[in-house]
Image 1: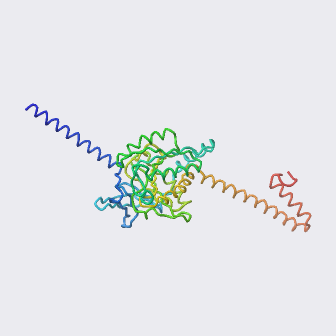
Image 2: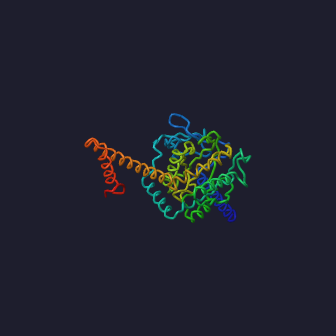
Length: 370
């Protein structure tokens, strides 16, 4: 009887431990918003009137946020898991704005890099190491030489053309499951020790090709989705960074950035304020189109991190101001000549008056009078 009692006590203890472990695994899976296998149920997002907005190969949760291509900002209020459908309420259509504090922070980074003559380091890795492209790789998933690494390497080369140092980790984190982010976290932390300007996790989506097909500057390429994890302390900084990238892309290459999705989970973005997940196309789109998009995206990243857009704007304004000053001087000198001619009727007095006016207006740098 004693042995039987001990046996059942141990059995009960083992059962409780197993149930606790199962619950923990499910909680972890839910926290990282479980990915959906390509071809399975894809969640679709609709607005309050029932109009279709977007879709993703991953669960949608109440509280997720979505910034559409036209910058209308939605927050998901209801999800129907049976129908793989979600419904969002509009929050604002002013998503392109970036806080003054964040702009000041970027300005400080630009100034520091300008003094060093160095645009800095960008680090990248790919949590879902099997992701591939059917048109190009022949399959959507490869455990060796996956297509996503071709895209990441191309993106890195384009960033180097813009003047950045790039480290793209070739570590793999298989299998493609909810534990992949926990496994890739160590690599992300190791990369952050090198103090990069930004940390990108390179992915692709698992929806239909038409969701990502676009044309930029007459070239057929793939769109890029910016993905932010909303369950982390850096969510506001991550989102501000994503908005800045989208705003720059919308101005220079309309249609390149598909949208911004803020989903439940961390996605290792709690590790760094300027960490983002980039989805380059989808498994059904031609890999060549995705590769072509990397050059445009690298230029967008440079405009945000390198400050080239701000510098070009300042240079343009300075050039315009100089032209305006020259025209003011010319008009003032001509006006003085016309006045002299009207007053004296002699051309000699006109020429003398014009020379004196030119000298006075230029501080003596032109003409004889100082």
